[in-house]
Length: 95
Image 1 (cartoon, rainbow, N blue to C red):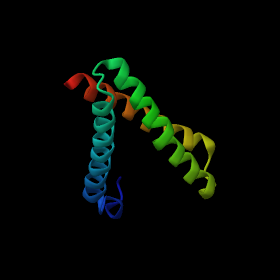
Image 2 (cartoon, helix red, strand yellow):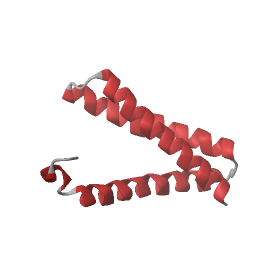
Image 3 (cartoon, one colour):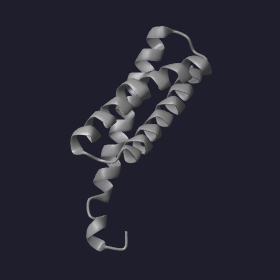
Image 4 (cartoon, rainbow, N blue to C red):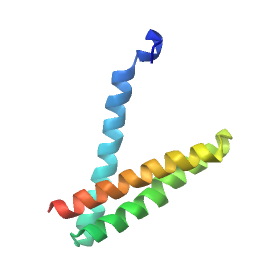
């Protein structure tokens, strides 16, 4: 990030990223509340389902059409899966 032009809009990206993560956490919280099982294992399972079925599937589908490398798809998918699992655990044991 030594290029001054690359830094433009960085705050907007961070704000948009926070909003999308917040939306994901709200969705996980709604599912966990609906299941009404508040332990770490339930949070892990729901986070894993959300991460794999929604985040990773969407990323992989987009990367197929953009013809991006499979390794990049795997890295970005795993990042989102781990994020959903951690969020699911935190939300489940919070109550």
